Image (tube, rainbow, N blue to C red):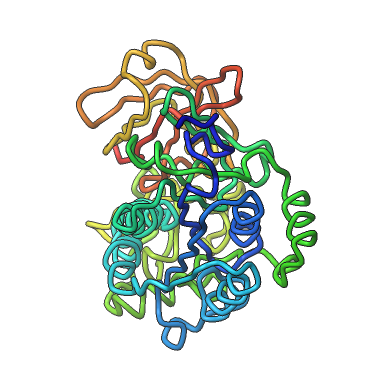
Length: 372
């Protein structure tokens, strides 16, 4: 028997549609679980334990802490849905924390949330859902998903201030066809209102702000813990090679940084480059941060390459604006020419591609910024 497509774009009655909801213990994923239950889906909530909070000193503003796991359990119990916890500490350490530390030591500015989505969330959890014969993996990310002809595409969320599409560019086509993002058409205050209507105890819970394994945003202490040899003094130089001062370790700096350089000059100085092989920091003036040409590696494309014959829009940092650009693709690398001034473009950051159509700003894929 054929049913009309349900709210997730699947050709099944909701009661016959098994969905796994990734429950972090926050208001967003809890609300999604409540929405799916209310609509009559067969819901299983899964929470990931990603690190040992007694070792990483979890704080209230971090996601995936011990308290979050308890909150997820309580919500699942209240909604009368099945719930399980998967213990992914080793996977998270290898796939996310180690990558984060190594990236800083290379003079890059890493984005651990992208790596987390790529590895433990949309790879390991994806495989777990398949093994459970679930029809979809549903998350509380603020991303629009539009499913047509059994193919799902990802769009920027209606709530631009909450949009998380930048962090999901590395999703594969297979994963994207399996994922669903019900909050993409909602504003954050609407999500909280739904949570209140569902009487969820997390309706007023504050949003997580810090990287989950970085207490109070102090990433230097995390790197020092795993790589104590990383804090080595070195020279701070001008762009013309003049020694201006001494730093206490390149991990204290990111490209585009202004504060904390501790060198006086008639004009503000910015970190222009980080040279890990020489253990040097290069500083200069703001105009020296402007780049028009960027090299990208490890491209992940969600649309046919012919789409890139046309001008596209790109986002070079998670809080950045959309910039017009042209991409030339060669194997897994890309040469990107941007048509507007942009400051502080750093290796290790993601560059995400978009185009606009009737549904909004569609994610075309992305790549990792690398040095020229």
